[in-house]
Image (cartoon, rainbow, N blue to C red; front, side, top):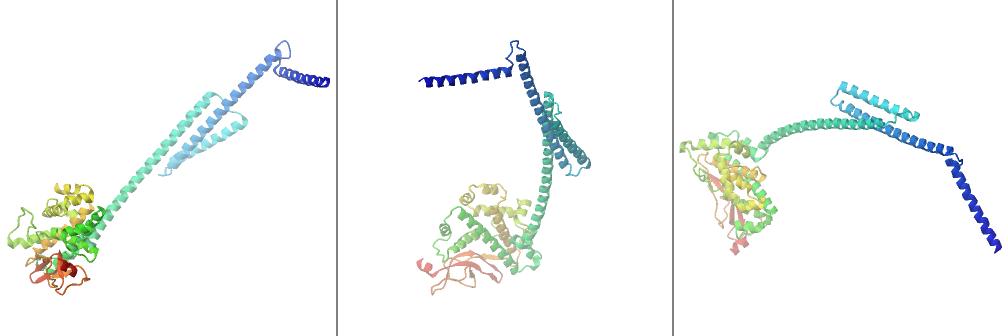
Amino acid sequence: MDSANKSTATSNKGRLARTFAKVLHLRAVTGIVSGDGTRKAKSRDSIRDDDDEKVRNTAAMEALVAKLFATISSAKAAYAQLQIAQSPYDVEGIQSADEMVVTELKNLSELKQCYLKKQFDFSPQVTQLAEIQEQQSLLKTYEIMGKKLESEFKNKDSEVALLRKKLDESNMQNRLLEKRLKPSGSSSILDNLHLQGLYPNNFITVLRFSIKSIRSFVKLMIEKMESAGWDLDAAASSIEPHVVYTISNHRCFAFESFVCREMFDGFHDPTFSLPNEPLPERKQRQSFFFDRFTELKSETPNEFLTRKPHSTFGKFCRNKYLNLVHPKMESSFFGDLNQRNVVNSGGYPETRFFAAFAEMAKWVWLLHCLAFSLEPEASIFQVSKMCRFSDVYMVSVTEGGFFFSDAGPRVAFTVVPGFKIGKTLIQCQVYLSPASAQANR
């Protein structure tokens, strides 16, 4: 027990000695070792001086950093000015901007030396002025870049204008080529026609282009039907009921038959069944219709309708479109009746669908004009359903493939009508009914 107490006492003495040593050391540092207080006052002055030094150093560093950023911003603005002066090339602008860049680089070098030698102004005003300079340089840079972008925008506008001009020239060239390559432009074949030099072969040529344009329109119409979700079998049956098609693609002939029936309706009439259309005397009729033929044959229908919206051909287009394209059909194709409304109001829609229709209408109209320009005039005919096939008056639109009864093939329906010019007969095109279909009827 005595030894334990001795050990504890020794430990307490050591701890107390260390505590006194710390107190003495602290008093020595803070100056509290003399009774007169002189040492203590000196220590406080020293601390205050240290704090002031720190404040000055902080202010100096802030001023240096502010100057550094301001100088860098000025250098960026000068470099941006140098860039924009190069395009378009501006000698004086380049020299001025180059001098500015060199000046700012020198300023950066001077700032470096001031930092190394600790010779820089640390007043708050310097910091504020540097920040103002930095903002001014940034604004100048943005102004320069804005001018550059504006210049580029103007250049792009010029490029667009140039490209648009080239596009217009290309479109003009394309239209010239189309007049030579497409049905609308096939009038070059008919350019040398004269009233006294008309022959049935000229009529056959125009008929060929008419059929081609009809089939192009029918193809587009079937595409629209498919896109609108039509039942093509039901649609074909509503046009030509009880017809059996050996190939499903043959349904297109029913639609072609429908279009031909509408487009050639009234073909036998010199006015094409247009009401209130005056006609010249019989002696002048040939030249009258040939003049109509000549007027339209070299133009696209869109060009002609734009130039003469109230012409007889314009009335013909309007009448045929309203009869051929049912409102329900147009609504299912396009979701509205906008095209019909435009046609009803005397206009012509600028759509692919109407362009195909107008192309077809042009060639049927030209065929009608040529029919009444000939001497003798051309007449139109078609054959009855289920009549016996005759290769004198008819030609099949398909190339065989049917097994007919002993009574011979029968006509299911006429696709394209036939024509007669004096002793010349142009066969009508028919779809022949298979033997099985004949037996079922």
